[in-house]
Length: 114
Image (cartoon, rainbow, N blue to C red):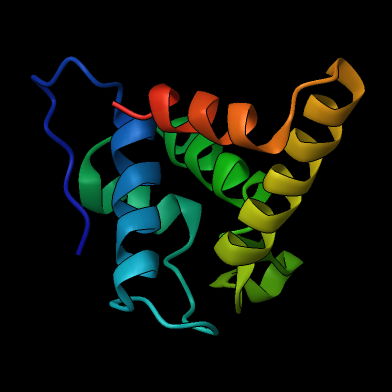
């Protein structure tokens, strides 16, 4: 179940994206779970179809969901973990290229989190 707070400072597409990410991370949405169509979810939430489409595109770019044309969008298996591993690998490569050691790079990551 997704909701949108129309009075929140966070745009509706971010609310949808983050709610789906959270539900995938907690296991509430399991791999293979089919999501509502863009039009259906937009109608259910009272928001524009382009808003839901943007949230779905961003979720797909993050590896959280996969769009299968007419078959719709489904939660991917391990998509978040795979995307996180790729990001970590890219970060490590960048730090090595900059001459930053492992301990310093890890410290930078720790400080980057709120």
